[in-house]
Length: 301
Image 1 (tube, rainbow, N blue to C red):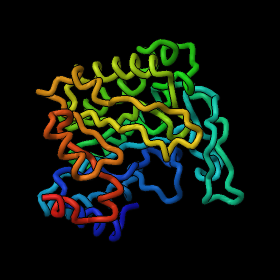
Image 2 (cartoon, rainbow, N blue to C red; image 1 turned 90 degrees about the horizontal axis):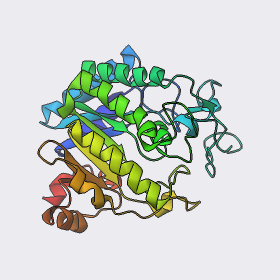
Image 3 (spheres, rainbow, N blue to C red; image 1 turned 120 degrees about the vertical axis):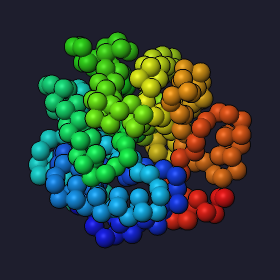
Image 4 (cartoon, helix red, strand yellow; image 1 turned 90 degrees about the vertical axis):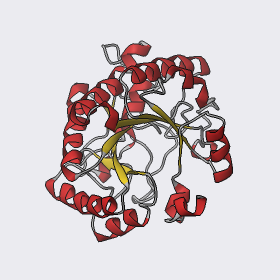
């Protein structure tokens, strides 16, 4: 539940034009971390409302990042309930260092009905709107649940939710449609990490290009507010499962009149400015620099 610390933290960073929150759980199950924030109870909504009131008083905007980690959760972090994924395929390489013995990933239960999780995202968006968020972002990157449906190494389903590119992209697109039904297209964004790597994700270069080309084109037709593309991060890929990909290869698929292209991962001020000046992206997203520097926007102006 967000409290006074979160009010102070986000208010300190309200110099940003748009704040994207930390990953926020859509149900009690589905976190990699202890004490992660949520948006599934009235108490959480009320806590976030206080954060929003303070941020809005400083004339900033704030989107809630909707988060479910799927197969990379651990039962010990969710009252013994199993982790879930599109298929019963566990990820490799991770350790839950906050748990006794630092256990690794477990084999998840295959989700029987993906529409039940799509409904969870919709309900979370409704609660976000009740709290006062200006919009929502679907966290569909970093090997979390929507990404697990997209990637053909974690999704081996043989029904309408797996197999072809269209079927594997069905889950995130259906979630986006539900979020748009709550907020309107121009208040919904999505985060993607095409190069994979983190949390044991990684398709071939050919499959990556085809899959994300289709997905980004479909997202553009929905005229959502933005598509955020994360560059490949080698330090987050100890198993070297991911690949270096040029995230700008998909820019031509995005209708810039309606949908902005945001990029992130290891940008500094100089590279970010060059990227914007070259017309490659519409905005640069900073994470770690903003954690360390609450006045980052003022420093860069």
